[in-house]
Length: 169
Ligand code: IMP
Ligand code: MG
Picture (cartoon, rainbow, N blue to C red):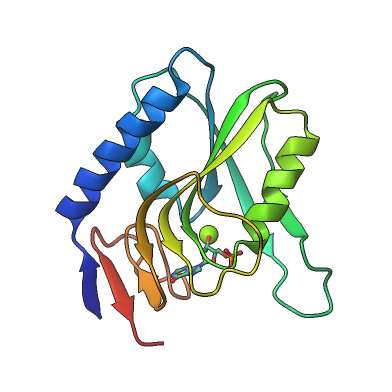
């Protein structure tokens, strides 16, 4: 495993992201929806750097990975509990890869009648993007490679590491 982003670099970038997001939402309501489990560490650092009032929700998504399932659908195994109709929603996830589950989830929120939906991911992995979606806010862009740490896992390992590593799978 090779270190890709050190904890201190991540902290610096998250601080900047927090101010960008704060400026964007200043004077408006904001509900942050964290996608479990991968976003937990990024989200907890990020929301402490946002200085406008934030309501928090969490969801758990499982994407269909087998070809027999329709594309563009996402299984929500734990959904939002609060009422988010009419609110400005910022979805926070660890990484945007193919973008398929994020696009489906974004559409799901739009159907719930939110006022706006934006996407923030710590990492924007552009190489395998298949769905027409980009993060509105992101921490770092990477081309390819499998990364772990700071919430990101490989078969449920390495989530709790403070730095981000690239691994050979
Ligand atoms: P997508 O629908 O392909 O964009 O799936 C994104 C999800 O796949 C992320 O939320 C991660 O859970 C997982 N994922 C994609 N790339 C990586 C990686 O490099 N490391 C760890 N998880 C990843
Ligand atoms: Mg994930």
